[in-house]
Length: 319
Image 1 (cartoon, rainbow, N blue to C red):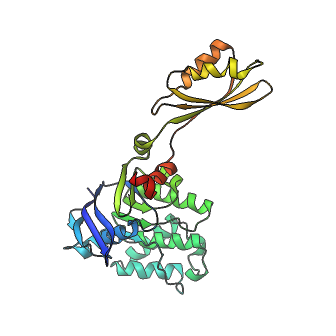
Image 2: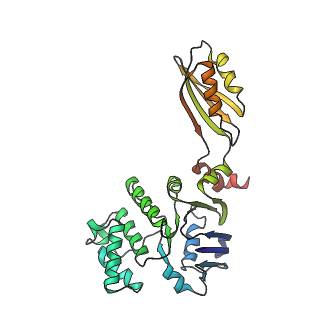
Image 3: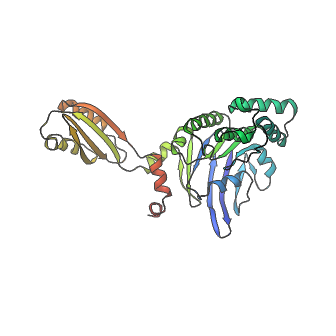
């Protein structure tokens, strides 16, 4: 395992920010670390990166314990903090040269890494500009470049797309996917679509405890409730509730059927089905037998947003 966290606990005074959590991150895995504000995400990331000591528990990075090998662990990690700490009066090249030198890079090796980071992070057009003149998106790119300047095995990215516009988010997401082919990546975000598009695995943390751990597909399977099928069809009838509705209601695994209205010969239905079932083939066959024209047949399962809300809303979680 690239990272192994065991029984990690952290207090701020009397407040328990992280409550006895354990998890592993495999080499080459992209892990999405999710949770509401104050859930313990940033605290956990700061402990893994050796910025904070835990009150209890252990963390190892490539079999190195953070308590005994802090400097060695830091050499293996690239860290983009939630509030990107940049020297605004330096230009991009100067800043990358400075951060690279802190990692022991020098001469041609340092110049080569700066060139690579400028190209990888799309900084070519602004490489001679002062960081204070850059947009939020470019500053995040500079932060990513400094996190990777020493070619670390592990990247810890805390809210890397915070404050970015949709186009910038797509660019950073693509960069993270590219990096995940070579490195172990942990990143936190509040954007659930980002997780679905980027992550191999997801951990959801709430009130300092892990409440879910799995692939996006596994979480959708484990936490989904009843599923919804939307049907729109053309059929000649003078009474849809008498001629059409009972046929949908009688389909196996349909718990509830709703007639959503008509426009001429076009009729709409919403079917609520048993968890894990898929009635679309049955509907298709029914339409063939009845001579209906299907205009829409779509299935909606529980989204990551709904799972996140369910697991991190206090009343729902406790109930």
